[in-house]
Amino acid sequence: MMAAVLVLDPIFEADLQPEQYAYRRGRSALDAVRHVHKLINTGHGEIVDADLSGYFDSLPHSELLKSVARRVVDGAMLHLVKMWLKAPVEETDDRGKKHRSTRNRDEGRGSPQGSPISPLLSNLYMRRFVLGWKKLGHEKRLGAYIVNYADDLVICCRGGAEEALATMRVMMTKLKLTVNETKTRVSKLPEEKFDFLGYTFGRCYSPKTGRAYLGTVPAKKRVIRICQAISKETGRNRTQLEPKTVVTKLNQMMSGWANYFCLGAVSKAYQAMDQHACMRLRQWLCAKHKVARPATRRYSDAILHGRFGLIRLPQRTRSFSWAKS
Image 1 (spheres, rainbow, N blue to C red):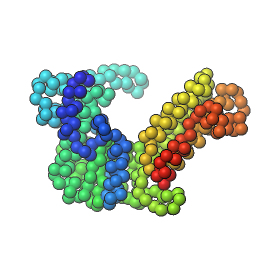
Image 2 (image 1 turned 30 degrees about the vertical axis):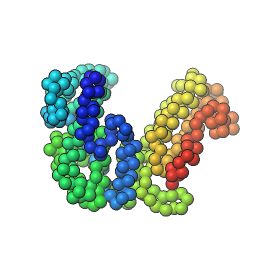
Image 3 (image 1 turned 90 degrees about the vertical axis):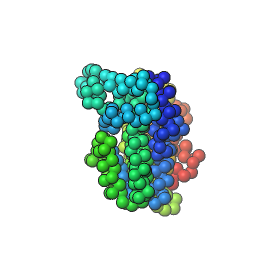
């Protein structure tokens, strides 16, 4: 299958729209975040925050294959794509038992997640919506610009976001996709905020001047999630490990998180994670060596960072001053 993806990818790459950022060479989720940031700071303050119900599981095979056939005429290749879409997939039920599912074949919809070709096919089908939005004149008429990453989608509007939402619903219905009405909403900046790709967009304040501006911060739920992961890695059930092993794992997790969450006002999120990591590592060391807590002198922050090598995230922002604002 991977060989076929290598053949098909450059064929369809030329057709994908600039608003699409997922699974493409030279593009990333951070590029999509930057695009949205630029739009909200150039007058596009009404946002359609769209959520599609089970996008990958809803891709209609018939329409999707038509999109593939528009550029691929080789019958054998088209047959292979069709077989991949209909192939049984292994699923795990609520009890942890694995079984083979033929739902995609039975319902004639869905692309197996985890399959090497699924990202390409998902982009190809979303292209229908993005291109249709522009060709039908909605972008120009409403001043409404799409930014898409896989099944994540926002429409940044100068005004008339409610009309853009209604138009989007009609188009998605024609594409046989389902809009999740409970999660889809209109947000009007600066009074309201919205989340996209792990970042919260909205009104921020400079800690130095108090000036209000439209910017980004790491979403609260993402900060909570990384702190929960840190807690799991420093649980009492892991006291048999060596400190170097635990600290190396923590540093990898925190660095990876910070490499993505590096745009906008990140200092508070870094400080929260840094404090949580110090607290949890200190508790873990106390449990491992049977030392009475809190042991803040024996295992001070300076010792955790110095002797044990735990990274200091707040120091990273010194290299990009705008992260403090």
